[in-house]
Image (cartoon, rainbow, N blue to C red; front, side, top):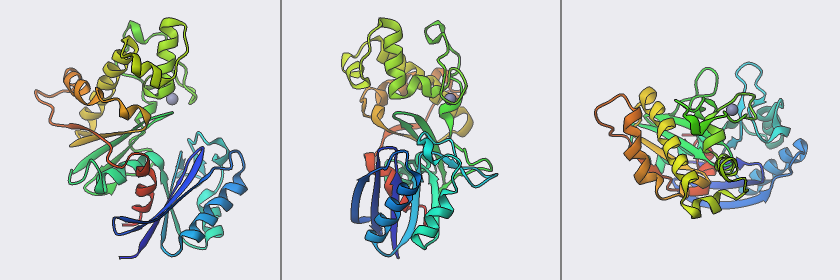
Length: 286
Ligand SMILES: [Zn+2]
C-alpha cells in the first residue's frame, strides 16, 4: 500500500499529513495566506513537496462546479471561480483529488472513525458553518451536482414562533439550517433574545434556553435527514459537536420528526476531531 498525502485547505490554516496505512507518518500546518490565491497554491505545493511521495487529496471549504470545474460555495471567497484542481496539479506535478471538507470529514469518520463498520454514515460539521457528507458502503456519495449532504442550506423544518423572523443566510436564502445550528447561529439566537453578544462557548456554559432551542432544532433538522437517508450513524464534528448533551437529548427528541415507530440511527461524536478533515482528504485515494 502506497503513501497517502492529505491536505486540509482551511480558511485560517492549511494542514498536511501523510498516512502510511492508517498511521500518521508526517504532519505539518501553516497559516493560510488569506485572500491571496497564488500564495495559497504555493503554500499547498510546498507542503506536498515536504511531505514527499504519495497520492494527493485536498479538502476545501467549497465544491468544484460540475459545469465549469471551478470552485463554488466556498466561504474562503478568494478560491471562488478559480480552477483550483488544475492549478494545484500544475504546481505539484501530480494528479490531485479535491473534495468538500465536510465530505472529507464524513469519509474519515466512516473509514476508521466513529462510523467505522456502518453501512451508511452521515457526517455533519457544526462549526462556523454547517455542512454534511454521505458515505455509503465505504464510498463517498458525490452526486451529479457535487452537493450530496449539503443540508446546512435547507430551510430549518417546521419553524415555530421562536424561530421567526427567519434569519438571512450568506447564501441569499432565509431560515437556512446553518443560520441556527452554526456557532454564530447560536450567538445570534442569544443576541435576539437578550440583546447581549456572547461567544458560542459562553452560551454553552450557561446551559440556558438558547442551548435548549439549539438541541431541539438539531433534532428537527436531523429528523428530516433520517427520513430521506435512513443512515446507520450520524457523526458530529465542528466546535458545537463538543456539547455533550447533544448525544443524549437529540436522539430523545428526534423520534417525533422521524416517520418510524423506532429510530435505530446512532448519534456519535467524531473520533478524529480536527484531524478528520485532513485524514479524509488522504482517504480520497482508496
Ligand atoms: Zn444558506
